[in-house]
Amino acid sequence: MSQTIIAAGFMPLTDSMLLVVAEQQGFAAAEGLSLRLVRETSWANIRDRVGVGHFDVAHMLAPMPIAANLGLSPLPVPFIAAMALGHGGNAVTVSLDLWAQMIAHGATDDLDPATTGLALAAAVHASPRRLRFGVVHQDSSHNHELRYWLAASGVVPDRDVEIVVLPPPLLPDALASGAIDGYCVGEPWGGVAVRAGHGRIVTTKSRIWRSSPDKVLGMRAAWADANPDTLAALIRALHNAALWCSAPANLPEAARIMAQPQFLDQPADLVGGALTGHLAIGAGATRQVERFYVPYAGAANFPWKSHAVWFYAQMVRWGQVQASPQNLALAAASFRPDLYRAALAPLGVPMPPDDYKIDGLITKPLELATPAGPLLQFPDGFFDGTRFDWSAPL
Image 1 (cartoon, rainbow, N blue to C red):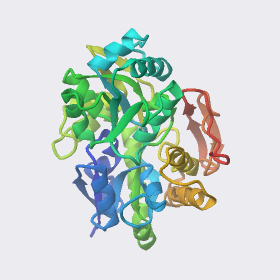
Image 2: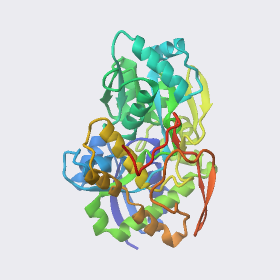
Image 3: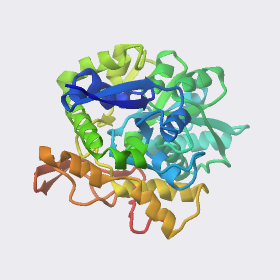
């Protein structure tokens, strides 16, 4: 039987796993699809190659479709996110020199963003020079979460520290050379600096903003409109890949697959640590981080419109875009839970009853009743105790 070929771009990060596993383990083939996976070198290339049609879909930064639709991208091409590719997955790594300064100001190695944030703020304000931090793209959850953490800790981004953009694989070398003092990135690139003896992981995305998206399945809106059946089949393939990846017994095989040269080209034990949340944080210390990267559970693949609104609110906060009802509507429309629901309806997958939620309301695991069965939701919201109400975002 002939298969529909889908060109899919990805960056070498552990959370590209759903696309890779869907192809490597046969979930795409079971849906009549063949994924032509293309490894890219930067997020700007991912965005631009989707925009010009080189890629049908891509492993994409969650804020990127929103930024495109708000006119913040070079090409005036509408994008959408049809599903999330999991929750969490990245961490903040600093140089050993900065870590020593943070220890002098009370930092501990528990990865608590409140404690480490205050220590970092003290080090920043005591520094004779402006420190420089790296993120993977302006339109990334990394940029927005780093800024949120810094600001909540008493550091004003762009005034007290400089934030620069580099592709994920270059960040460990930039830290080693002294070009930057720290960075926020998806694994395995924080772990790479730790293993090389150049960096210290000080906190994680999963603790700054619990149960939050990092990457999405992104595409041109026109491609989605023209290929509804193919897109639905792809969502089902990725859903089944996510289920497979959520089984602990499958993680060693997932790490072996992802470690291969055409994907991450990193040691399987380093990849496995990122998949299980067992992180080497520096100087021989390890920590087990609960829900560091969640490929499926807790509605981790559901593209919440309220999450799109949060990213929009951060773009407004940091001066990327003007606040307006029109821009708010464009941002919310960038995430498409309707497509996700329709694709998985034949499988009877439990879904959240709404497309929006207030982040910060769930403080302990909660089981929701849905027509398709119970849906477990994990704690969400922000480390500083604030809630985000999508209906009053600014």
